[in-house]
Image (cartoon, rainbow over all chains, first blue to last red; front, side, top):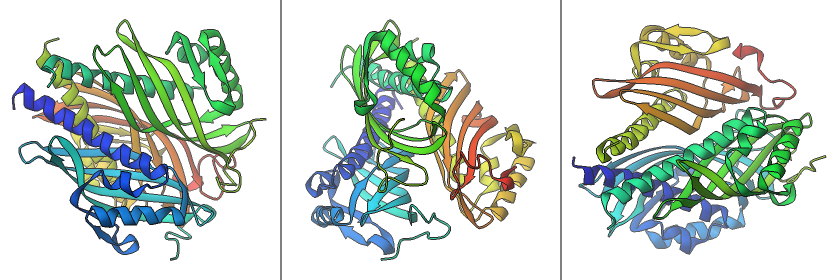
Length: 154
Length: 155
Length: 153
């Protein structure tokens, strides 16, 4: 790789970090569906597994996030310790993140432990998420803890 | 597109600012080392924590850390997800950070959830804080959680 | 420093951050002793202070596989890396937050870590991993009532 490509790879890692933190900040600022879906490609998939379902395309992702504040009135998305791999030639990348999330769900303090397996694509110079796979390790009432109640009912 | 030199300078500035913030965390966790922390700020810097107070200049900022070192007998400052903006000539920058902080305050276990908006200035070869705005989202006794007691009184 | 050296330093910081993230992920349950130890140099040392000192890949793997049997769930939230590169050697410090199930009870742990690494055959290998345990408390108690759980000692 020449110097130009090596710097491009470093810049891509920083750009993807920014993308994920921007996603976290919009989520914490009330989950605005328009703003959050703009971080995704048109054909992106937000895959929340059995708990949160699979949502395909920007419109579906917007609808998903627009509905979240009905239940989640407060959250801090701590996006922790990422691993980002970039394929410059393909214009794509993958990322793994940990999420630690103190939340208020249906007026109850709740702790979430989540990891993400992400895929990103460079669309005309901008890195966007093409897939987010959300792996839920626990979402527990603050009073209970994750051994007693690893997953909130409902 | 900017030339290679400028692009490398940007990446170096981001990494340099990260190191400044982690140094700040480590000194806070070393019982708020007041001289060490104060040295990370420019002479005219402002530390503004809203309800936690506003401190301007080295003397006031050092006084704030001295108070913190008495009230906070234990803390871990987890400096997490951040966005750092820098522009040529890379002598100043801004940053947004998330912090998760388990701490012991006046003998009570607490969880603190906050974000920072910072302004950085390069002084010689070193990045320094020119402004730190700490935005507290919750400061809750461990036993209570952020719904029951989002903001614990400091005294 | 030449521009190539400066780029290399930035790349090595990312590479070390990546290796350490991989080390952390291998000790999320189910712990993978072989993958964890595979990030260490042959004579690598893991110094866990109150939990013992382990020298060499075999001893490190055995310890981590032992955790696999004892700890059915945990997450390792690692971040706040400060990494210094000096040629083929590196030092790093970072923060760790853990959520283990110990003996059927949720615990939370607050730690700081430090490591030295060496680039061997193009790969960053951990030559020493250290930690300081600030708290590892039963979740229903908190670090003021019980800083360190009995079973972690």
